[in-house]
Length: 398
Ligand SMILES: Cc1ncc(COP(=O)(O)O)c(C=O)c1O
Image 1 (cartoon, helix red, strand yellow):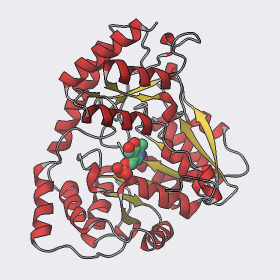
Image 2: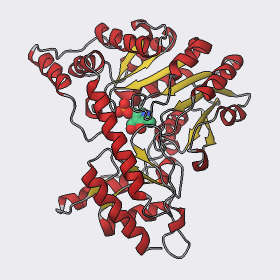
Image 3: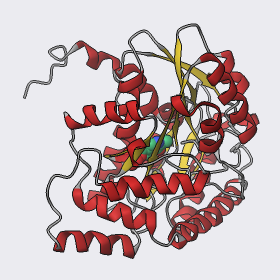
Image 4: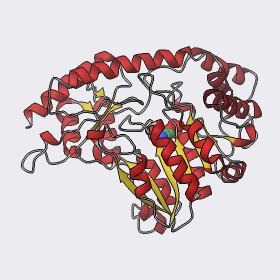
């Protein structure tokens, strides 16, 4: 097969493949060879999808609910999404403000394509989930990156975002709680940022993928705060993936002003059409059913977070901020790196997989060399063993 890439469209030069792919492939190879790999790399819940959600999907299948649906999603789902955002945050939205998408990722993609023009600046923050920056570039716009800092718990600060605004800035994209840091934009910062965005007529797009995974009762009503100041330029991108352990079902949503929803509908009508019909019924069950399953999973993630932080503290050269949300730790490993030993976090994760069979994700994947992402969306037993091996590897090589 021809493997030349110079035959491809120019735009493909702009798009980076995730640096995690190599590690994932190597982990797969080891597993197939029968090696007991400890996976702290997963960006998805280890819990099964709750039973009542699976039952709704069975019902849909049995009823032959297996055809195309309305392009933005069935009305019952759009209504359920709108109700949830109205109920959770008190914002004034109805089904006309909602389109169901194939994951939060597609919602963010639609928002980028619908709003950014070539040549626009779009402010976002890093360490961050790489898709946001790639989507900005795919829309022809320029990412303007604001760094957050471990000393500050990686919190996303309004002042830093505002300072990055240029005359060409069209939008600000925020991910809170953030992947990989678990950091938040605080409500106080949200107030400041919303006022500034409103004054300057900027769009704000919030990736709320982990919105239901916030620990320690930290108030995090970002949709309410932004909607009060600038509802006409606010786009919320949410997802069923993490809160209800539904990553494979592919259901997310965009909530925003009607023109954005219509534009997203147009894009979707020429790409993926509708979210899988069965998934839509399952998502309704997730949104409208008991939320006890979400609370239970959150409590377990919190237990794991606190436990892994304690285990990691056995080796004080791992420097770690306490994540306020999501399900990742993002320690600095710079104390273990040096020019004559392991030089980069990418080399560190490669070696850790090779020698100790532990999968982690290097900071390079999140524009943050010198860090390591550890997912605690796995059992405490796996976590204990994984951290033991991690500490052993780090000590042996420093
Ligand atoms: C920060 C963030 N946003 C959005 C997503 C998209 O998830 P999905 O497309 O499964 O909803 C992810 C998935 O890992 C994520 O980490």
